[in-house]
Image (tube, rainbow, N blue to C red; front, side):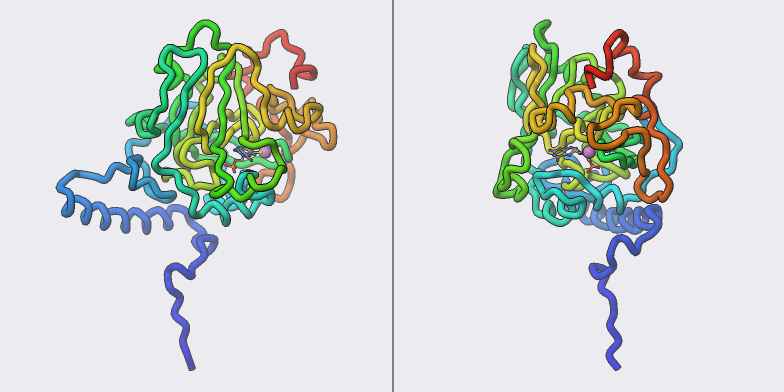
Length: 320
Ligand SMILES: Nc1nc2c(c(=O)[nH]1)N[C@H]1C(S)=C(S)[C@@H](COP(=O)(O)O)O[C@H]1N2
Ligand SMILES: [Mo]
């Protein structure tokens, strides 16, 4: 009888039920590779956000606990990285994890332009601060599901200050990479490529708003928007644009991809609001991925204490 021995690569990650176990195995392997690195280069540790080392799954260094944490149960790593919306890699939830495997995220640069004193083409490495924060945020998709994600990132507001916006900068517009060779979803006209999103300046400067470069303490997987994605936790998930290559400061409200595609369904603000239904379905409840029963959706996705004042006096049925 032939005994089939499972190679480690045959073990599907879904079989690894406990992320802690998974991490400790990774950490062991990492310690081994760090030792080899030190022996080879004499330097202390590999630069994990440097040009060559940033691979999904690499552990990120210098991560501190950030503010605004929730103590809700984290959505398992396996779900966060296999149930994705990233239309550049296909429209069903499974395809981003399958089709983004070879997506090249290094070298990566970001164009900063428009109403700023310091417009430039920045290398990604120059935009990422030495100290990163873990921010555990709820992500609520407009499709009425949600997750709790331990992002690793940094304050967008702090970064914006470095560019010195002028007094004419009223909005920030973000653009995703356009590269149909690498992004098979862009070969079809499902959306008007490249994907564009935007925030009002005060939303962009709000301390809740971050740019993420990782999750679960590790470099961001490609399907989650590597190497750099926005996370705006009080807005529907589609505002959190992935794989950003351009940040533009403008005077007029940007025309965003989803509001261009269906203006009566997706407004510019897109604040999570259980009282304003999507024209085709209710937004009153949501299904937390991995759970069976639906739960009530909270105003501003539960961040009302932090952000409600930004919209004082605005009719949120008009500015949906
Ligand atoms: N460039 C780009 N960014 C995107 C999307 C997309 O299709 N393309 N989908 C959005 C939607 S609808 C959601 S819900 C979130 C999903 O993020 P996640 O896959 O990390 O959970 O990404 C958002 N950012
Ligand atoms: Mo979404």
